Amino acid sequence: MPEAILSLSKVTKQFGALLASDNVSLDLMPGEIHALIGPNGAGKSTLIKQIAGEIKPDSGEIRFAGRDIGELDAVERSRMGLARTFQVSSLMPEFSVLQNVVLAQQSVSGKIFRFFKPVLSDASLLEPAMAQLERVGLADRAQMRAADISHGERRQLEMAVALALKPRAFLLDEPMAGMGPEGSKNLTDFLGGLRAEAPILLVEHDMDAVFALADRISVLVYGRIIATGTVDEIRGNDDVKRAYLGEEA
Ligand SMILES: Nc1ncnc2c1ncn2[C@@H]1O[C@H](COP(=O)(O)OP(=O)(O)OP(=O)(O)O)[C@@H](O)[C@H]1O
Image (cartoon, rainbow, N blue to C red; front, top):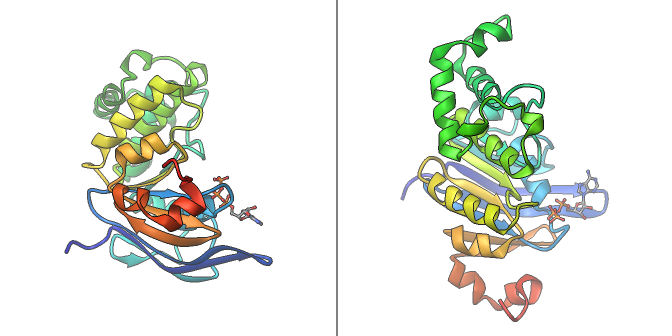
């Protein structure tokens, strides 16, 4: 049995009287897309924020890449390869699409540059950045300002930036939000291929996307995981139907 890349053990977080994470244990295995679903206010974003290091659990343990990351801040976690995208925009709007990817690459290269300019004309950085843009289908927008591309294209650019960081796991918080049907379909195809690069913990309300992509699904209700299983197991689970999916699922 391979070791989990990310694992949560009994993570608990209370806001006043509200138990937003109630003894949550969850793992993300190599090569998988693990979807986290649940009704509004169930605590999905709170959990993602605790994994990313934006808020601290009251108790419990979070391990990533074999180590307890409880004491690391969000920047240190992202340097370890934990890539969070979408709800927090990582883009620099005044820079070009290509420059955004170059800057992301250099942030993990370990090299310190005093000025942006030499970085932005360094061929050894431009070529791989262009390759990432081709991968997400944005090569023809490379020279546009990030501020001037469409909403869907910004999502693609965030993906290219995330890829440039060479992540060991992706935390994706509602990637389908605000995408039209065609955009959702393209992104679904793209994410399906991405799992080979790094496993994905996916928070998503679009159930078509979740059912198409997830290797496993965990269902969160009132801060508690009420079931974890394959798509078929979750669709057939009576507790899940009652609490979330409804009888038609
Ligand atoms: N900083 C905070 N202080 C107090 N309560 C909070 C805080 N953050 C979230 N909550 C509460 O915790 C609960 C879980 O919220 P959370 O945003 O994690 O849910 P969610 O499952 O992501 O919801 P949605 O699907 O609507 O995004 C909610 O009742 C919310 O009001």
